[in-house]
Length: 284
Image (cartoon, rainbow, N blue to C red; front, top):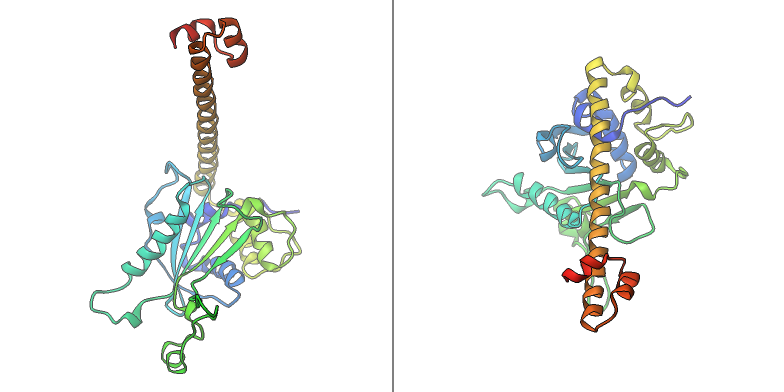
């Protein structure tokens, strides 16, 4: 029987900043980046300073891996029209925050921006997207590479390895069919469950450390409050969306009614085609 596991966003705020629990995040990052990741330290980030009652249910985390590269993990439940710009700002801020004036540009760190979103960001049918920076010749179509000397001094094989890389996981797009170990993680992100047969790196630690029944009474109470607040937030957002649609439809009906009135159309026809009341039409 599947355990009742806590949500990943709540765990990021409450549990995964504990060094003893780094193994959970290391497992997730290793499966996503397709290499063994070890977290050296969790650094201060905007999400650290937000409590569970924040208006928008968002959390972010900034980690430093064993190669001193910065890893930004951002999780967002509510849709944001400017989320792509937010991703860009996050990587830019991380780069500048950890670059000291007077340092050599060689000390600029690699940044990974990992975005776990529970809404349909952009247009696309996939549920995992990877973005990286490449320079392509406008005449020949060749990809600009590093010289042998640069490869030796920088420790990279390709230019894109120097620049920030972006990952977007659109959780709600996942069809619940785990075809590989990364899918097993996304299944957990979507369903708060880990199937018995799942063997992705870090998921055994999820079973052990993110089990709701293993939480302290205070942690259980805090978790329940978070779920309640998240539910309220979603209701508020949905209500605002519906009200916005309704207001737009009403404005459209008023505009049609106004034009019909100007053209001398009978009030009864105006009422029939716009759905407005006669006194509303008279006031237009």
